[in-house]
Length: 234
Length: 248
View: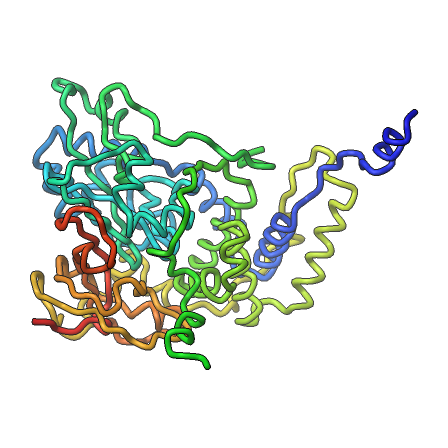
Protein backbone atom coordinates (compact mmCIF):
# COMPACT_ATOMS: atom_id res chain seq x y z
CA UNK A 1 0.00 0.00 0.00
CA UNK A 2 1.47 3.33 -0.96
CA UNK A 3 1.98 6.12 1.57
CA UNK A 4 -0.63 8.19 -0.20
CA UNK A 5 -3.26 5.52 -0.05
CA UNK A 6 -2.60 4.94 3.62
CA UNK A 7 -3.15 8.64 4.51
CA UNK A 8 -6.32 8.68 2.55
CA UNK A 9 -7.78 5.79 4.47
CA UNK A 10 -6.98 7.42 7.78
CA UNK A 11 -8.53 10.79 7.04
CA UNK A 12 -11.77 9.96 5.25
CA UNK A 13 -14.50 9.29 7.80
CA UNK A 14 -17.35 6.90 7.05
CA UNK A 15 -20.42 8.69 5.68
CA UNK A 16 -22.76 9.45 8.58
CA UNK A 17 -25.99 11.18 7.78
CA UNK A 18 -26.19 13.91 10.39
CA UNK A 19 -28.98 16.19 11.47
CA UNK A 20 -28.39 19.85 10.57
CA UNK A 21 -28.42 22.83 12.95
CA UNK A 22 -31.51 24.08 11.10
CA UNK A 23 -33.43 20.89 11.76
CA UNK A 24 -32.40 20.79 15.42
CA UNK A 25 -33.56 24.36 16.00
CA UNK A 26 -36.88 23.97 14.18
CA UNK A 27 -37.69 20.78 16.08
CA UNK A 28 -36.68 22.26 19.45
CA UNK A 29 -38.84 25.35 18.96
CA UNK A 30 -41.83 23.38 17.69
CA UNK A 31 -41.69 21.01 20.66
CA UNK A 32 -41.42 23.84 23.19
CA UNK A 33 -44.31 25.74 21.58
CA UNK A 34 -46.63 22.73 21.66
CA UNK A 35 -45.65 21.82 25.23
CA UNK A 36 -46.35 25.37 26.38
CA UNK A 37 -49.65 25.59 24.51
CA UNK A 38 -48.43 28.51 22.37
CA UNK A 39 -50.03 26.70 19.46
CA UNK A 40 -51.61 23.27 19.27
CA UNK A 41 -50.40 20.27 17.31
CA UNK A 42 -53.73 20.47 15.49
CA UNK A 43 -53.12 24.07 14.38
CA UNK A 44 -49.69 23.06 13.16
CA UNK A 45 -51.18 20.13 11.26
CA UNK A 46 -53.89 22.28 9.65
CA UNK A 47 -51.39 24.86 8.49
CA UNK A 48 -48.99 22.22 7.19
CA UNK A 49 -51.76 20.73 5.10
CA UNK A 50 -52.57 24.18 3.73
CA UNK A 51 -48.91 24.90 2.95
CA UNK A 52 -48.44 21.59 1.18
CA UNK A 53 -51.35 22.23 -1.14
CA UNK A 54 -50.78 25.76 -2.37
CA UNK A 55 -49.40 26.20 -5.88
CA UNK A 56 -49.85 28.19 -9.11
CA UNK A 57 -52.85 26.22 -10.40
CA UNK A 58 -55.59 28.56 -9.07
CA UNK A 59 -53.77 31.59 -10.49
CA UNK A 60 -53.58 29.97 -13.93
CA UNK A 61 -57.23 29.01 -13.74
CA UNK A 62 -58.18 32.55 -12.81
CA UNK A 63 -56.34 33.98 -15.82
CA UNK A 64 -57.83 31.43 -18.23
CA UNK A 65 -61.31 32.11 -16.89
CA UNK A 66 -60.82 35.85 -17.31
CA UNK A 67 -59.65 35.36 -20.91
CA UNK A 68 -62.87 33.51 -21.69
CA UNK A 69 -65.38 35.51 -19.68
CA UNK A 70 -65.31 39.33 -19.84
CA UNK A 71 -67.64 39.59 -16.82
CA UNK A 72 -65.30 37.46 -14.73
CA UNK A 73 -62.34 39.50 -15.93
CA UNK A 74 -64.07 42.65 -14.74
CA UNK A 75 -64.64 41.02 -11.36
CA UNK A 76 -61.00 39.89 -11.16
CA UNK A 77 -59.79 43.43 -11.77
CA UNK A 78 -62.26 45.21 -9.49
CA UNK A 79 -62.90 42.68 -6.69
CA UNK A 80 -60.04 40.17 -6.85
CA UNK A 81 -60.87 38.57 -3.48
CA UNK A 82 -64.32 37.66 -4.75
CA UNK A 83 -62.91 36.43 -8.06
CA UNK A 84 -60.49 34.19 -6.15
CA UNK A 85 -63.42 32.43 -4.47
CA UNK A 86 -64.49 31.26 -7.93
CA UNK A 87 -61.19 29.41 -8.31
CA UNK A 88 -61.56 27.99 -4.79
CA UNK A 89 -59.11 30.34 -3.11
CA UNK A 90 -60.39 31.97 0.06
CA UNK A 91 -57.78 34.43 1.31
CA UNK A 92 -59.15 34.03 4.86
CA UNK A 93 -57.97 30.41 4.88
CA UNK A 94 -56.68 28.49 6.74
CA UNK A 95 -57.07 30.48 9.96
CA UNK A 96 -60.20 32.58 9.46
CA UNK A 97 -57.88 35.62 9.38
CA UNK A 98 -55.91 34.53 6.33
CA UNK A 99 -52.19 33.84 6.39
CA UNK A 100 -50.19 36.29 8.48
CA UNK A 101 -47.63 36.87 5.75
CA UNK A 102 -49.86 37.34 2.71
CA UNK A 103 -52.50 39.69 4.11
CA UNK A 104 -55.90 40.36 2.59
CA UNK A 105 -55.26 42.85 -0.19
CA UNK A 106 -54.76 41.68 -3.75
CA UNK A 107 -54.43 43.43 -7.09
CA UNK A 108 -54.43 41.69 -10.41
CA UNK A 109 -52.33 43.62 -12.90
CA UNK A 110 -53.74 43.46 -16.40
CA UNK A 111 -51.20 43.60 -19.21
CA UNK A 112 -52.21 45.54 -22.31
CA UNK A 113 -50.59 45.90 -25.74
CA UNK A 114 -48.71 48.91 -24.31
CA UNK A 115 -48.04 47.96 -20.65
CA UNK A 116 -46.25 44.87 -19.35
CA UNK A 117 -46.15 44.24 -15.59
CA UNK A 118 -43.49 42.43 -13.55
CA UNK A 119 -43.69 41.75 -9.83
CA UNK A 120 -40.87 41.74 -7.26
CA UNK A 121 -40.35 42.45 -3.59
CA UNK A 122 -37.07 44.28 -3.19
CA UNK A 123 -37.36 43.99 0.62
CA UNK A 124 -38.03 40.30 1.10
CA UNK A 125 -40.28 37.94 -0.82
CA UNK A 126 -43.86 39.32 -0.78
CA UNK A 127 -45.76 37.01 -3.13
CA UNK A 128 -49.42 35.96 -3.54
CA UNK A 129 -48.95 32.52 -1.90
CA UNK A 130 -52.65 31.52 -1.74
CA UNK A 131 -52.89 31.96 -5.54
CA UNK A 132 -49.41 31.00 -6.74
CA UNK A 133 -47.90 28.90 -3.95
CA UNK A 134 -44.46 29.60 -2.55
CA UNK A 135 -42.18 31.84 -4.55
CA UNK A 136 -39.30 30.34 -6.52
CA UNK A 137 -35.86 30.58 -4.98
CA UNK A 138 -34.65 33.10 -7.54
CA UNK A 139 -37.54 35.46 -6.70
CA UNK A 140 -36.15 35.75 -3.15
CA UNK A 141 -32.54 36.17 -4.26
CA UNK A 142 -30.63 39.47 -4.24
CA UNK A 143 -29.77 38.63 -7.85
CA UNK A 144 -33.41 39.22 -8.87
CA UNK A 145 -34.47 41.74 -6.22
CA UNK A 146 -31.50 44.06 -6.72
CA UNK A 147 -31.54 44.07 -10.49
CA UNK A 148 -35.14 43.82 -11.71
CA UNK A 149 -36.12 47.22 -10.28
CA UNK A 150 -33.21 49.03 -11.92
CA UNK A 151 -32.31 47.00 -15.00
CA UNK A 152 -35.67 45.40 -15.86
CA UNK A 153 -35.13 44.92 -19.58
CA UNK A 154 -31.71 43.22 -19.33
CA UNK A 155 -33.05 40.93 -16.57
CA UNK A 156 -36.16 40.06 -18.58
CA UNK A 157 -33.88 39.31 -21.54
CA UNK A 158 -32.08 36.74 -19.35
CA UNK A 159 -35.48 35.03 -19.07
CA UNK A 160 -35.77 35.20 -22.85
CA UNK A 161 -38.29 38.04 -22.82
CA UNK A 162 -37.47 41.04 -24.99
CA UNK A 163 -40.13 43.70 -25.29
CA UNK A 164 -40.26 46.50 -27.87
CA UNK A 165 -39.66 50.07 -26.71
CA UNK A 166 -43.29 51.02 -27.29
CA UNK A 167 -44.32 48.62 -24.50
CA UNK A 168 -43.97 50.25 -21.09
CA UNK A 169 -42.31 47.87 -18.62
CA UNK A 170 -43.96 48.52 -15.26
CA UNK A 171 -42.27 47.01 -12.21
CA UNK A 172 -44.56 46.45 -9.23
CA UNK A 173 -42.46 46.37 -6.08
CA UNK A 174 -44.81 44.73 -3.58
CA UNK A 175 -43.21 45.91 -0.39
CA UNK A 176 -46.28 46.48 1.84
CA UNK A 177 -49.58 44.61 2.35
CA UNK A 178 -50.85 44.40 -1.22
CA UNK A 179 -50.04 41.25 -3.11
CA UNK A 180 -49.92 41.28 -6.89
CA UNK A 181 -50.34 38.88 -9.78
CA UNK A 182 -49.91 39.57 -13.48
CA UNK A 183 -52.73 38.83 -15.93
CA UNK A 184 -50.97 38.47 -19.28
CA UNK A 185 -52.54 39.02 -22.69
CA UNK A 186 -54.12 35.95 -24.25
CA UNK A 187 -51.74 34.92 -27.01
CA UNK A 188 -52.63 34.33 -30.63
CA UNK A 189 -53.07 30.74 -31.70
CA UNK A 190 -55.38 29.88 -28.80
CA UNK A 191 -58.69 30.54 -30.54
CA UNK A 192 -61.36 28.06 -29.52
CA UNK A 193 -59.29 26.67 -26.62
CA UNK A 194 -61.00 25.43 -23.45
CA UNK A 195 -60.33 26.90 -20.01
CA UNK A 196 -58.15 23.91 -19.11
CA UNK A 197 -56.13 24.23 -22.32
CA UNK A 198 -55.58 27.91 -21.68
CA UNK A 199 -54.67 27.42 -18.01
CA UNK A 200 -51.88 25.06 -19.04
CA UNK A 201 -49.92 27.79 -20.80
CA UNK A 202 -50.34 30.30 -17.96
CA UNK A 203 -47.17 29.32 -16.14
CA UNK A 204 -46.08 30.71 -12.80
CA UNK A 205 -43.45 32.78 -14.62
CA UNK A 206 -46.20 34.39 -16.73
CA UNK A 207 -47.99 35.48 -13.57
CA UNK A 208 -44.77 36.96 -12.16
CA UNK A 209 -44.26 38.71 -15.48
CA UNK A 210 -40.90 37.27 -16.53
CA UNK A 211 -42.48 35.28 -19.38
CA UNK A 212 -45.39 35.56 -21.80
CA UNK A 213 -47.83 32.72 -22.40
CA UNK A 214 -47.22 30.86 -25.63
CA UNK A 215 -49.06 27.91 -27.22
CA UNK A 216 -47.00 24.79 -26.59
CA UNK A 217 -45.07 26.20 -23.61
CA UNK A 218 -46.28 24.81 -20.29
CA UNK A 219 -43.12 24.99 -18.17
CA UNK A 220 -41.28 27.79 -16.43
CA UNK A 221 -38.26 29.37 -18.08
CA UNK A 222 -35.53 28.43 -15.61
CA UNK A 223 -35.79 24.87 -14.44
CA UNK A 224 -32.30 24.17 -13.06
CA UNK A 225 -32.96 23.09 -9.47
CA UNK A 226 -30.72 22.93 -6.43
CA UNK A 227 -31.55 19.63 -4.71
CA UNK A 228 -32.47 19.42 -1.01
CA UNK A 229 -30.68 17.23 1.51
CA UNK A 230 -33.98 16.06 3.01
CA UNK A 231 -36.76 17.35 0.76
CA UNK A 232 -40.37 17.82 1.81
CA UNK A 233 -42.04 14.51 2.53
CA UNK A 234 -38.78 12.51 2.51
CA UNK B 1 -14.89 61.64 10.11
CA UNK B 2 -18.26 59.95 9.73
CA UNK B 3 -20.12 62.01 7.16
CA UNK B 4 -23.90 61.96 6.92
CA UNK B 5 -23.76 59.70 3.84
CA UNK B 6 -21.52 57.21 5.58
CA UNK B 7 -23.68 57.23 8.71
CA UNK B 8 -26.84 56.44 6.73
CA UNK B 9 -25.04 53.79 4.71
CA UNK B 10 -24.24 52.00 7.99
CA UNK B 11 -27.81 52.48 9.19
CA UNK B 12 -29.44 51.18 6.00
CA UNK B 13 -31.70 48.15 6.60
CA UNK B 14 -30.06 45.00 5.13
CA UNK B 15 -33.40 43.99 3.59
CA UNK B 16 -33.43 47.08 1.33
CA UNK B 17 -31.78 45.42 -1.66
CA UNK B 18 -33.44 47.16 -4.61
CA UNK B 19 -31.05 48.72 -7.10
CA UNK B 20 -27.80 47.54 -5.51
CA UNK B 21 -25.07 46.47 -7.91
CA UNK B 22 -25.03 42.77 -8.61
CA UNK B 23 -23.42 40.63 -11.30
CA UNK B 24 -25.80 38.71 -13.54
CA UNK B 25 -26.11 35.30 -11.91
CA UNK B 26 -28.19 32.35 -13.11
CA UNK B 27 -31.77 32.10 -11.87
CA UNK B 28 -32.25 28.84 -9.98
CA UNK B 29 -35.13 26.89 -8.58
CA UNK B 30 -34.61 25.08 -5.30
CA UNK B 31 -36.08 21.93 -3.94
CA UNK B 32 -37.38 22.81 -0.50
CA UNK B 33 -36.03 21.11 2.62
CA UNK B 34 -38.55 19.64 5.04
CA UNK B 35 -37.23 21.96 7.79
CA UNK B 36 -37.85 24.95 5.47
CA UNK B 37 -41.53 24.05 5.04
CA UNK B 38 -41.77 23.40 8.78
CA UNK B 39 -40.20 26.79 9.48
CA UNK B 40 -42.69 28.55 7.24
CA UNK B 41 -45.52 26.74 9.03
CA UNK B 42 -44.02 27.53 12.45
CA UNK B 43 -43.83 31.25 11.74
CA UNK B 44 -47.35 31.40 10.35
CA UNK B 45 -48.80 29.40 13.23
CA UNK B 46 -47.07 31.75 15.69
CA UNK B 47 -48.99 34.52 13.93
CA UNK B 48 -52.21 32.53 14.14
CA UNK B 49 -51.51 32.04 17.86
CA UNK B 50 -51.10 35.78 18.43
CA UNK B 51 -47.40 35.69 19.31
CA UNK B 52 -46.46 38.18 16.63
CA UNK B 53 -47.61 39.88 13.43
CA UNK B 54 -45.56 39.22 10.31
CA UNK B 55 -44.00 42.68 10.39
CA UNK B 56 -42.24 41.74 13.63
CA UNK B 57 -40.80 38.71 11.89
CA UNK B 58 -39.57 40.89 9.03
CA UNK B 59 -37.86 43.32 11.40
CA UNK B 60 -35.98 40.54 13.16
CA UNK B 61 -35.33 38.21 10.20
CA UNK B 62 -34.51 40.81 7.58
CA UNK B 63 -32.91 43.64 9.53
CA UNK B 64 -31.75 42.72 13.01
CA UNK B 65 -30.01 39.57 11.81
CA UNK B 66 -27.34 41.78 10.22
CA UNK B 67 -26.07 42.00 6.69
CA UNK B 68 -23.60 39.11 6.62
CA UNK B 69 -26.05 36.51 7.95
CA UNK B 70 -28.78 38.09 5.80
CA UNK B 71 -26.80 37.42 2.66
CA UNK B 72 -25.01 34.25 3.74
CA UNK B 73 -27.53 31.98 5.49
CA UNK B 74 -30.58 30.25 3.99
CA UNK B 75 -33.71 32.31 3.53
CA UNK B 76 -35.81 30.23 5.93
CA UNK B 77 -33.11 30.18 8.58
CA UNK B 78 -33.74 33.90 8.96
CA UNK B 79 -37.40 33.12 9.64
CA UNK B 80 -36.41 30.45 12.15
CA UNK B 81 -33.97 32.74 13.94
CA UNK B 82 -36.65 35.42 14.14
CA UNK B 83 -39.15 32.99 15.67
CA UNK B 84 -36.55 31.87 18.22
CA UNK B 85 -35.57 35.41 19.13
CA UNK B 86 -39.14 36.61 19.51
CA UNK B 87 -40.09 33.67 21.77
CA UNK B 88 -37.17 34.43 24.09
CA UNK B 89 -37.55 38.21 23.94
CA UNK B 90 -41.26 38.09 24.71
CA UNK B 91 -40.60 35.64 27.56
CA UNK B 92 -42.50 32.68 26.15
CA UNK B 93 -39.40 30.53 26.65
CA UNK B 94 -36.16 31.03 28.54
CA UNK B 95 -32.67 30.80 27.11
CA UNK B 96 -32.13 27.78 29.35
CA UNK B 97 -35.21 25.96 28.03
CA UNK B 98 -34.12 26.64 24.48
CA UNK B 99 -30.56 25.47 25.06
CA UNK B 100 -31.55 22.35 26.99
CA UNK B 101 -33.93 21.38 24.21
CA UNK B 102 -31.30 21.96 21.53
CA UNK B 103 -28.96 19.61 23.40
CA UNK B 104 -31.75 17.07 23.83
CA UNK B 105 -32.60 17.05 20.12
CA UNK B 106 -28.91 16.84 19.16
CA UNK B 107 -28.45 13.89 21.51
CA UNK B 108 -31.46 12.11 20.04
CA UNK B 109 -29.69 12.00 16.70
CA UNK B 110 -26.09 11.87 17.99
CA UNK B 111 -25.29 8.61 16.22
CA UNK B 112 -26.50 9.92 12.90
CA UNK B 113 -29.90 9.59 11.35
CA UNK B 114 -29.51 6.01 10.17
CA UNK B 115 -32.41 6.39 7.82
CA UNK B 116 -34.60 8.24 10.33
CA UNK B 117 -36.34 11.47 9.28
CA UNK B 118 -35.89 14.08 12.00
CA UNK B 119 -39.19 15.13 13.52
CA UNK B 120 -40.58 16.88 16.58
CA UNK B 121 -41.59 14.73 19.56
CA UNK B 122 -43.39 16.99 22.00
CA UNK B 123 -43.74 15.29 25.40
CA UNK B 124 -47.28 16.53 25.93
CA UNK B 125 -49.67 19.26 24.71
CA UNK B 126 -49.75 22.29 26.96
CA UNK B 127 -52.80 24.23 28.05
CA UNK B 128 -52.86 27.35 25.92
CA UNK B 129 -55.55 29.21 27.85
CA UNK B 130 -53.10 31.31 29.88
CA UNK B 131 -50.74 32.07 26.99
CA UNK B 132 -50.41 35.78 26.21
CA UNK B 133 -51.81 36.60 22.75
CA UNK B 134 -52.13 39.80 20.79
CA UNK B 135 -55.46 41.38 19.81
CA UNK B 136 -54.74 40.78 16.11
CA UNK B 137 -56.00 37.20 16.49
CA UNK B 138 -59.53 38.25 17.38
CA UNK B 139 -59.63 41.60 15.54
CA UNK B 140 -58.71 40.03 12.19
CA UNK B 141 -61.03 37.04 12.44
CA UNK B 142 -63.41 36.87 9.48
CA UNK B 143 -61.93 40.10 8.08
CA UNK B 144 -58.24 39.68 7.37
CA UNK B 145 -55.48 42.26 7.60
CA UNK B 146 -55.56 45.15 6.54
CA UNK B 147 -59.33 44.84 5.95
CA UNK B 148 -59.71 44.88 9.75
CA UNK B 149 -58.60 48.54 9.86
CA UNK B 150 -61.13 49.87 7.34
CA UNK B 151 -62.76 53.14 8.41
CA UNK B 152 -60.21 53.98 11.12
CA UNK B 153 -57.83 56.40 9.40
CA UNK B 154 -58.21 60.13 8.90
CA UNK B 155 -59.49 61.06 5.42
CA UNK B 156 -56.94 60.35 2.69
CA UNK B 157 -54.70 63.35 2.01
CA UNK B 158 -54.09 62.41 -1.63
CA UNK B 159 -56.19 61.15 -4.51
CA UNK B 160 -55.39 59.21 -7.65
CA UNK B 161 -53.50 61.39 -10.12
CA UNK B 162 -51.94 63.67 -7.46
CA UNK B 163 -48.25 64.44 -7.84
CA UNK B 164 -46.32 63.51 -4.70
CA UNK B 165 -42.77 63.49 -3.47
CA UNK B 166 -41.44 60.76 -1.19
CA UNK B 167 -40.01 62.31 1.95
CA UNK B 168 -36.39 61.52 2.72
CA UNK B 169 -36.97 60.73 6.39
CA UNK B 170 -34.11 59.88 8.76
CA UNK B 171 -35.48 56.35 9.10
CA UNK B 172 -33.64 54.57 11.91
CA UNK B 173 -34.21 50.97 13.04
CA UNK B 174 -36.83 49.92 10.50
CA UNK B 175 -38.72 50.99 7.41
CA UNK B 176 -40.30 49.49 4.32
CA UNK B 177 -39.91 52.54 2.14
CA UNK B 178 -36.99 51.59 -0.12
CA UNK B 179 -34.07 53.97 -0.29
CA UNK B 180 -34.35 54.16 -4.07
CA UNK B 181 -37.68 56.03 -3.95
CA UNK B 182 -36.80 58.46 -1.17
CA UNK B 183 -36.79 61.98 -2.46
CA UNK B 184 -38.31 60.87 -5.77
CA UNK B 185 -41.33 62.44 -7.43
CA UNK B 186 -44.22 60.34 -8.64
CA UNK B 187 -47.96 60.11 -9.04
CA UNK B 188 -50.62 58.42 -6.92
CA UNK B 189 -51.93 55.54 -9.02
CA UNK B 190 -54.11 53.79 -6.43
CA UNK B 191 -55.63 54.48 -3.02
CA UNK B 192 -54.83 51.20 -1.25
CA UNK B 193 -56.15 50.59 2.27
CA UNK B 194 -55.87 51.77 5.85
CA UNK B 195 -53.29 50.20 8.13
CA UNK B 196 -50.84 51.14 10.86
CA UNK B 197 -47.45 51.91 9.31
CA UNK B 198 -45.01 48.97 9.18
CA UNK B 199 -42.43 51.03 11.07
CA UNK B 200 -44.76 50.83 14.10
CA UNK B 201 -46.24 47.38 13.45
CA UNK B 202 -42.72 45.95 13.44
CA UNK B 203 -42.56 46.26 17.25
CA UNK B 204 -45.80 44.43 17.95
CA UNK B 205 -47.46 47.65 19.11
CA UNK B 206 -51.22 47.67 19.18
CA UNK B 207 -53.76 50.45 19.07
CA UNK B 208 -51.79 52.76 16.75
CA UNK B 209 -54.00 54.80 14.47
CA UNK B 210 -54.12 53.41 10.93
CA UNK B 211 -53.26 55.69 8.00
CA UNK B 212 -53.89 55.52 4.26
CA UNK B 213 -51.50 53.69 1.98
CA UNK B 214 -51.02 54.56 -1.68
CA UNK B 215 -49.53 52.90 -4.72
CA UNK B 216 -47.25 55.49 -6.27
CA UNK B 217 -46.04 55.35 -9.86
CA UNK B 218 -42.58 56.60 -10.74
CA UNK B 219 -40.83 56.99 -14.05
CA UNK B 220 -37.73 54.86 -14.08
CA UNK B 221 -35.70 57.77 -15.43
CA UNK B 222 -36.66 59.71 -12.27
CA UNK B 223 -35.34 56.94 -9.99
CA UNK B 224 -31.98 56.07 -11.52
CA UNK B 225 -29.32 58.34 -12.99
CA UNK B 226 -28.38 55.75 -15.55
CA UNK B 227 -31.65 54.27 -16.71
CA UNK B 228 -31.14 53.24 -20.31
CA UNK B 229 -34.61 51.91 -21.15
CA UNK B 230 -37.41 53.89 -22.81
CA UNK B 231 -38.69 57.00 -21.04
CA UNK B 232 -42.12 55.42 -20.58
CA UNK B 233 -40.84 52.56 -18.37
CA UNK B 234 -42.19 52.85 -14.84
CA UNK B 235 -42.11 51.39 -11.35
CA UNK B 236 -44.85 51.29 -8.75
CA UNK B 237 -44.60 50.73 -5.05
CA UNK B 238 -46.85 51.12 -2.03
CA UNK B 239 -46.13 53.83 0.50
CA UNK B 240 -47.85 54.95 3.74
CA UNK B 241 -49.12 58.52 3.92
CA UNK B 242 -46.50 59.67 6.45
CA UNK B 243 -43.81 59.23 3.79
CA UNK B 244 -45.56 61.40 1.16
CA UNK B 245 -45.80 65.12 0.59
CA UNK B 246 -47.71 67.09 -2.02
CA UNK B 247 -45.64 68.17 -4.99
CA UNK B 248 -46.79 70.56 -7.65
